[in-house]
Structures are given as structure tokens and as C-alpha cells.
Image (cartoon, rainbow, N blue to C red):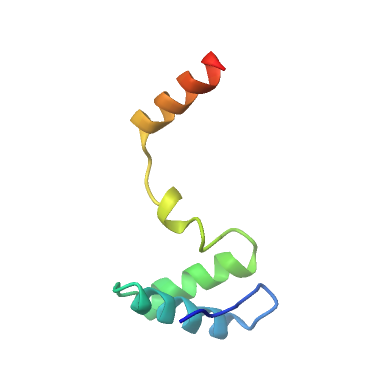
Length: 72
């Protein structure tokens, strides 16, 4: 299921959208966590397309990328 949502939507609609999106991906998301993410989304600080990419630090990957960029 594809759900379109942008920052002009109401915060509660964004929260509900995030809960549905998590469920569609086989994950659980509490209402309180979804509410916090919706606040970030409304402020432009959260991009759901990048959540899995930036969720944790990857020092090894960062080092590898920096070496590749330095060699280019």
C-alpha cells in the first residue's frame, strides 16, 4: 500500500501514516514514537525514505566512503 503524505498534513494524520507504514513493513511502531517522528516530519527534520539509512552510525562504511572519495 502506498500512502502519500507531506508536511502540510495534520500531525495526527502523519502519525497514523507512519504507524501504517511500519505495519506494512512488518514492524511495530508505538503511538508515542510515531508522534515524535510526526513532530520531526512536520519540522522538516525527518525523511521517511532515509530512516533506515541514517538510523545508526556506520564508522566502517564512513571510512570506506571517505577513502573512495579521496581517491577520485
